[in-house]
Structures are given as structure tokens and as C-alpha cells.
Image 1 (cartoon, rainbow, N blue to C red):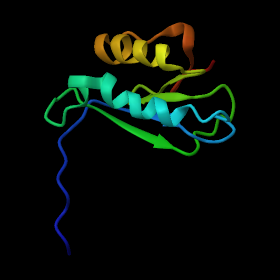
Image 2 (cartoon, rainbow, N blue to C red):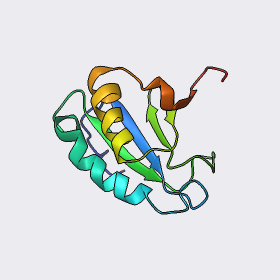
Image 3 (cartoon, rainbow, N blue to C red):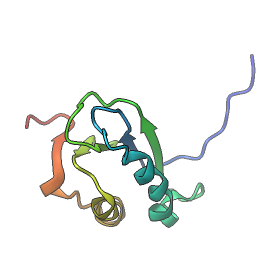
Amino acid sequence: MPNKPLMNSYARHIFICTGRYCDPEGKAGALYARLAQLLGELGHYENPRRVKRGMTPCLGVCAGGPIVVIYPEGIWYHHVDEALLKRIVAEHLGQDRPITEHLFHKLGEEQ
């Protein structure tokens, strides 16, 4: 059996949906690229508060995109543009303060 890969721990994982129904104008790819810069120290491999980022072709919402979800909290944001993404990084990821006016779902809670 091959050796298991090693990975530093991380605190959160942020996903951006790139699906054509959620993101018909194709903005999510640019947001994903910009996210690497916005994360700064939070994106560093050795940081115990590290935030991993990922793209997915479908989060199952198919409207209101680009959609961004953050785990482990399971907080979902809609209509994310660069200005909102900056706020998500600074306030939600940096200060543990979700941006409630753009939040449309939270794992385990009825909306």
C-alpha cells in the first residue's frame, strides 16, 4: 500500500461555484483567482488558521450566483462580487463575523 499523503491542518474551506446556471456570466473564476491574493496570511500553508479554497462546478443552488460557501460553519453567500468577497475574507474569515445581509443559508438552520 502506498504511503498516505501529508497535509497541514486548516481551519476553514471556502468554495466558489462555477456552474453555468449559478454563474452564467463566468465571474466565479476571476473571484477564485482573486481570493488567493485576498487571503494573504490566511492562505499560508503553515498558518493554523489557514483557509483552503476550492472551486466546484455545482453546489446545487443554480441561481443567485456566484455562490460562495464556507465550511465548517456551512454558511452560504449569494450574488458574490469582488467587493463582497473582500468583506467575506476580512470580516467572516478574518474576524469571525459572518455578513448576515448576504447570507442565505446556514447548515442545520431552516431559512
